[in-house]
Length: 182
Ligand code: GDP
Ligand code: MG
Image 1 (cartoon, rainbow, N blue to C red):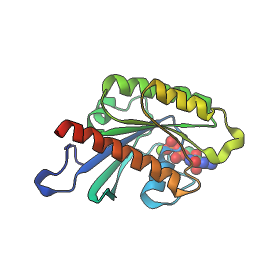
Image 2 (spheres, rainbow, N blue to C red):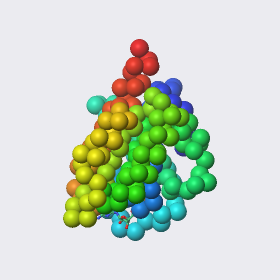
Image 3 (cartoon, rainbow, N blue to C red):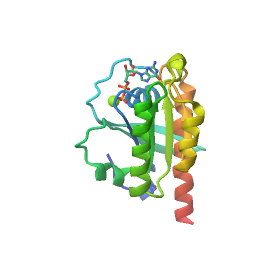
């Protein structure tokens, strides 16, 4: 895992570091694995925190995407990922209003401690529409309040939903860097 930012060091592939946050069970690991492998894994140890790497073509440039799939431990060292992250994906489940409130807490934390770092709010599990507790409008309103991207997704169905989230976030990082460099 590389902590270096703003890539292109010695002609190497630039690193894009993304941290996933959210209440346990919302689908952080399922989304991560779906993005990395295009597969949906039903059961994933909720206590595993790990970092995954995938090479991507971002508008014709090869980049190295690193994803930290966290596990929402009270004890986990926030500073560690706050320093490392180029962007955050904050996940809740549309079927769980508690996870939505938890997402608000994460948004507050991130916006306080990592002000200019891009953030995407993601309402996951839209395949479970009949159990929906949080409307799309509520999700969208929260993202407006915190000035971040907003998506609804499912890790259980089409890959495109999940890919859109990660690509949206990668473009935000790219935009942020080009503003810093010029
Ligand atoms: P995490 O604790 O946030 O990493 O959550 P997991 O990725 O381990 O997912 C928790 C549970 O929700 C697992 O049983 C997953 O199979 C399930 N799950 C995750 N994403 C989805 C989804 O989009 N739709 C459905 N139906 N189940 C999901
Ligand atoms: Mg997990």
